[in-house]
Length: 84
Image (cartoon, rainbow, N blue to C red; front, side, top):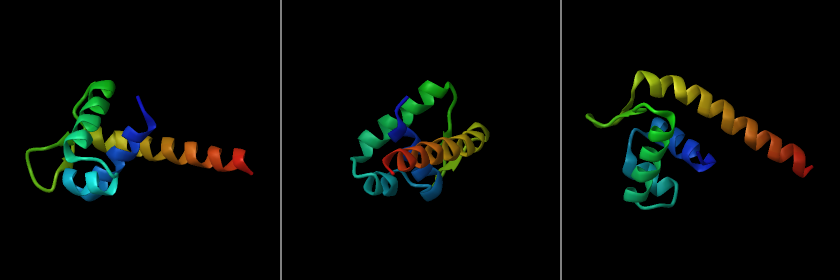
C-alpha cells in the first residue's frame, strides 16, 4: 500500500470523478484508475461504485474514507512535527 493511494482515494471520494481527480493528482486517468484498483485489491473490497456518475463510495468505501483521512492526517502531522 502506498500513501499516494490514500490521497487518490480521498480525492475521488470528494470529487466523485476519476477524470477530475486524475487532473488534480497530476496523473493520467488510466494511471489513476490503476492506483485506485490497486488500493481496492490491497483492502480486499470494492471501495467505489463505478456504476453511476458521479461515482459513489460503497459502504466499505465510506468506512475506509474515515480511516484514510485519519491516516493521512497523522502522517502529515508527524512529518511537520519532525521537520520542526
